[in-house]
Length: 583
Image (tube, one colour):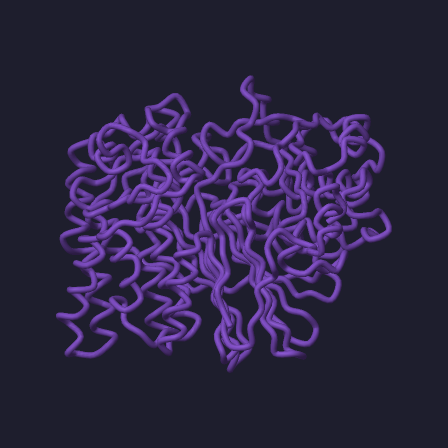
């Protein structure tokens, strides 16, 4: 950290607002402190990283149900220490069978409206079950116990969730079933008040009870009973009945036929780091492309958060996001030329397009990765792009055997109604498709939207593992690039790395409907010196100020399991209620 706040901290004898958490046995870090505790309790009870990660992930769907839904999305990446294998679970649902690529162009003026029409099949429940089934040791009921208690008995409302609900009061009021939960007594719950979600607690308890009833036939039968209860049983019928009555497209066949997939990770190198993400159905490979471009620069000599450094990272981000806009979509439907996009030669070609002294005025042209056909350039929107979407969280766990689990569950409760009696908002992630039927991420039956929630895992040359993730919509990859550079290039520990001041570009179409686009816009936290911000403006960036430690800049959770010392260190971003727990 090089700003005035960090200088004051050093005078007082500390180098970060929070101490870096360290342990030698196991560690969990999550977007909410109670979720980290839920995961840690499972580790203490003998569960492995997968059991603990699932417990914490389900808990986030209760503790941050404004941002994360139990019936939402949950991309997962897992490292299996025994085989040294990295696997991913897609954790992203598909469009209903009744959708067509031109559906929104024909019926909604090309927009994807709030409400049930943006619903895709919920994937998070199957993702958690699948992870437990393949790699876990405990039951769903054991892993969901903390979430059930938080929903049934309540937990203290905290400032950010209260603020989020307050920002979306009118959205929640659109649906009585949503207002009943999120506006109890007709008002926004205040920090410190107990927030109860009884219907959600009953839903989770029903799943656990179904598992218990089937467990006499074995653990696998119990987990299958959980899956059937959600995707074929009472919950499925409640979701479909509501959609049928309110103009939705989701059917029982859509739910019953859905399964998440095991997919190979995508990999690239950044210096001595091997970095893994999920595939191009999410924005994970964008992180890798940015790192590939940056690998050709001497970033350390520029100085942390100097004009040259911020400009270089920003221009690399723009180039990679231009490729995301042109190429990324569900690889089962779209030919995404990842081998080319992540090749050293392609990174060199993209690097050559960068002007070291002048900002590109908007989103640069995409690279000629494979038979490129020009498309209409996006039109700048009158309204400035929202300064950071917030509908996501993160959890990672490292256990005593070296297994690593990381997930970025998501989906808000303010853009689609709660299904009465369930406490659930089935995934509204259709908001990240595009109504233009020519776009690579247009809707289609069985197709997945292009997802912003992503999860990453890096490995040092000695095999030391480093899982990391963050909320923040299009800010996610940008925040992770900066944290990785903070650690690898500038030698910061995990806590210093997540606390350092941040910046984010919006010079590309936003992933969320209505896909606003603000050419040249660059948000920068106030802790970056004014002289740097002035220097960036002189190079052509439209600099806008963020307050110190703004939640819109993401909330990175990161761990480093140092193989040489056996010490696990973790950083939990103070921009949101993140925390690490371990010993």
